[in-house]
Length: 159
Image 1: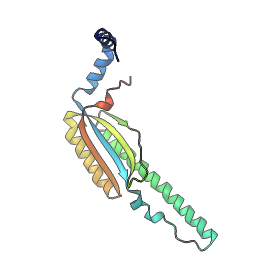
Image 2: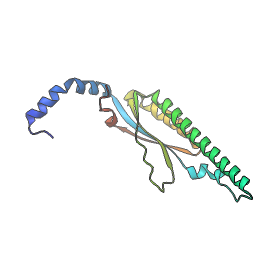
Image 3: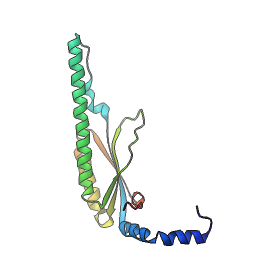
Image 4: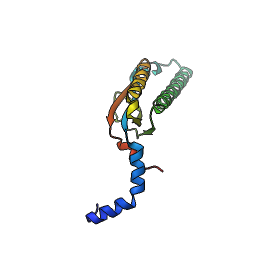
Protein backbone atom coordinates (compact mmCIF):
# COMPACT_ATOMS: atom_id res chain seq x y z
CA UNK A 1 0.00 0.00 0.00
CA UNK A 2 1.43 3.31 -1.07
CA UNK A 3 0.87 6.60 0.71
CA UNK A 4 0.93 8.70 -2.45
CA UNK A 5 1.03 8.60 -6.24
CA UNK A 6 4.63 9.82 -6.09
CA UNK A 7 5.58 6.76 -4.02
CA UNK A 8 3.93 4.49 -6.61
CA UNK A 9 5.90 6.15 -9.42
CA UNK A 10 9.14 5.90 -7.44
CA UNK A 11 8.61 2.17 -6.79
CA UNK A 12 7.66 1.51 -10.42
CA UNK A 13 10.76 3.30 -11.69
CA UNK A 14 13.04 1.39 -9.32
CA UNK A 15 11.46 -1.94 -10.40
CA UNK A 16 11.20 -1.10 -14.10
CA UNK A 17 13.94 -3.49 -15.28
CA UNK A 18 12.29 -6.39 -13.46
CA UNK A 19 8.82 -5.38 -14.70
CA UNK A 20 10.01 -5.28 -18.32
CA UNK A 21 11.66 -8.69 -17.96
CA UNK A 22 8.43 -10.23 -16.64
CA UNK A 23 6.32 -8.53 -19.32
CA UNK A 24 8.62 -9.81 -22.09
CA UNK A 25 8.36 -13.31 -20.66
CA UNK A 26 4.55 -13.41 -20.52
CA UNK A 27 3.72 -11.44 -23.66
CA UNK A 28 1.70 -13.56 -26.12
CA UNK A 29 1.53 -16.37 -23.55
CA UNK A 30 -1.42 -17.82 -21.68
CA UNK A 31 -1.69 -19.97 -18.60
CA UNK A 32 -3.34 -23.39 -18.58
CA UNK A 33 -4.11 -25.35 -15.43
CA UNK A 34 -3.82 -29.13 -15.46
CA UNK A 35 -4.86 -31.45 -12.64
CA UNK A 36 -4.28 -35.19 -12.53
CA UNK A 37 -6.38 -37.22 -10.10
CA UNK A 38 -7.25 -40.83 -9.46
CA UNK A 39 -10.19 -42.67 -7.96
CA UNK A 40 -8.26 -44.79 -5.49
CA UNK A 41 -11.37 -46.74 -4.49
CA UNK A 42 -11.47 -48.13 -8.01
CA UNK A 43 -7.75 -48.90 -8.04
CA UNK A 44 -7.41 -50.36 -4.56
CA UNK A 45 -10.09 -53.07 -4.64
CA UNK A 46 -7.41 -55.74 -5.02
CA UNK A 47 -5.62 -54.53 -1.90
CA UNK A 48 -8.36 -55.63 0.52
CA UNK A 49 -7.45 -58.52 2.74
CA UNK A 50 -9.92 -61.23 3.61
CA UNK A 51 -10.07 -63.10 6.89
CA UNK A 52 -6.77 -64.72 7.73
CA UNK A 53 -6.82 -68.35 8.87
CA UNK A 54 -3.58 -67.94 10.81
CA UNK A 55 -1.03 -65.37 11.93
CA UNK A 56 1.20 -66.30 9.00
CA UNK A 57 -1.68 -65.77 6.57
CA UNK A 58 -2.38 -62.41 8.18
CA UNK A 59 1.25 -61.31 7.81
CA UNK A 60 1.36 -62.49 4.19
CA UNK A 61 -1.81 -60.53 3.43
CA UNK A 62 -0.33 -57.42 5.08
CA UNK A 63 2.82 -57.84 2.99
CA UNK A 64 0.73 -58.12 -0.20
CA UNK A 65 -1.24 -54.99 0.74
CA UNK A 66 1.98 -53.09 1.45
CA UNK A 67 3.55 -54.22 -1.86
CA UNK A 68 0.39 -53.26 -3.78
CA UNK A 69 0.37 -49.80 -2.16
CA UNK A 70 4.05 -49.28 -3.01
CA UNK A 71 3.41 -50.34 -6.61
CA UNK A 72 0.44 -47.99 -6.82
CA UNK A 73 2.55 -45.09 -5.51
CA UNK A 74 5.21 -45.85 -8.14
CA UNK A 75 2.53 -45.86 -10.85
CA UNK A 76 1.19 -42.51 -9.64
CA UNK A 77 4.68 -40.95 -9.69
CA UNK A 78 5.37 -42.39 -13.14
CA UNK A 79 2.13 -40.97 -14.57
CA UNK A 80 2.69 -37.56 -12.96
CA UNK A 81 6.27 -37.40 -14.27
CA UNK A 82 5.24 -38.47 -17.79
CA UNK A 83 2.40 -35.94 -17.87
CA UNK A 84 4.59 -33.09 -16.63
CA UNK A 85 7.30 -34.00 -19.14
CA UNK A 86 4.94 -34.21 -22.12
CA UNK A 87 3.15 -30.95 -21.34
CA UNK A 88 6.34 -29.09 -20.44
CA UNK A 89 7.71 -29.95 -23.90
CA UNK A 90 4.95 -27.79 -25.42
CA UNK A 91 5.01 -25.07 -22.75
CA UNK A 92 7.49 -22.29 -22.05
CA UNK A 93 7.40 -22.94 -18.30
CA UNK A 94 5.60 -25.12 -15.78
CA UNK A 95 4.90 -24.51 -12.12
CA UNK A 96 3.60 -27.30 -9.90
CA UNK A 97 1.19 -26.04 -7.27
CA UNK A 98 0.55 -27.16 -3.70
CA UNK A 99 -1.73 -30.19 -3.57
CA UNK A 100 -4.48 -30.17 -0.98
CA UNK A 101 -6.80 -33.17 -0.82
CA UNK A 102 -9.88 -32.72 1.31
CA UNK A 103 -10.82 -35.68 3.45
CA UNK A 104 -13.78 -37.49 2.03
CA UNK A 105 -12.91 -36.66 -1.58
CA UNK A 106 -13.76 -39.46 -3.97
CA UNK A 107 -10.69 -38.65 -6.05
CA UNK A 108 -7.10 -38.09 -4.91
CA UNK A 109 -5.31 -35.18 -6.53
CA UNK A 110 -1.84 -36.24 -7.68
CA UNK A 111 -0.75 -33.21 -9.70
CA UNK A 112 -1.85 -29.60 -9.96
CA UNK A 113 0.29 -27.49 -12.25
CA UNK A 114 0.19 -24.26 -14.21
CA UNK A 115 1.73 -24.13 -17.68
CA UNK A 116 2.84 -21.02 -19.55
CA UNK A 117 2.06 -21.66 -23.19
CA UNK A 118 2.63 -19.42 -26.23
CA UNK A 119 -0.72 -18.55 -27.83
CA UNK A 120 0.47 -20.08 -31.11
CA UNK A 121 0.90 -23.47 -29.36
CA UNK A 122 -2.47 -23.48 -27.55
CA UNK A 123 -4.07 -26.03 -29.91
CA UNK A 124 -1.04 -28.30 -29.70
CA UNK A 125 -1.06 -28.04 -25.89
CA UNK A 126 -4.77 -28.91 -25.63
CA UNK A 127 -4.29 -31.81 -28.06
CA UNK A 128 -1.42 -33.15 -25.95
CA UNK A 129 -3.53 -32.89 -22.79
CA UNK A 130 -6.46 -34.71 -24.43
CA UNK A 131 -4.19 -37.50 -25.71
CA UNK A 132 -2.73 -38.05 -22.24
CA UNK A 133 -6.18 -37.88 -20.67
CA UNK A 134 -7.44 -40.68 -22.93
CA UNK A 135 -4.42 -42.87 -22.17
CA UNK A 136 -4.63 -42.28 -18.41
CA UNK A 137 -8.40 -42.80 -18.26
CA UNK A 138 -7.87 -46.49 -19.05
CA UNK A 139 -6.10 -46.84 -15.70
CA UNK A 140 -8.62 -44.85 -13.66
CA UNK A 141 -6.91 -41.46 -13.83
CA UNK A 142 -8.65 -38.21 -14.73
CA UNK A 143 -7.06 -35.14 -16.30
CA UNK A 144 -8.75 -31.78 -15.93
CA UNK A 145 -7.73 -28.81 -18.10
CA UNK A 146 -8.66 -25.21 -17.32
CA UNK A 147 -7.87 -22.07 -19.23
CA UNK A 148 -6.65 -20.24 -21.06
CA UNK A 149 -6.04 -17.72 -18.30
CA UNK A 150 -3.89 -14.64 -18.05
CA UNK A 151 -0.46 -15.86 -16.89
CA UNK A 152 -1.07 -15.14 -13.20
CA UNK A 153 1.24 -17.89 -11.94
CA UNK A 154 4.16 -16.58 -13.99
CA UNK A 155 4.36 -12.89 -13.08
CA UNK A 156 6.69 -13.55 -10.18
CA UNK A 157 10.24 -12.98 -11.41
CA UNK A 158 12.34 -15.97 -10.37
CA UNK A 159 15.68 -14.68 -11.63
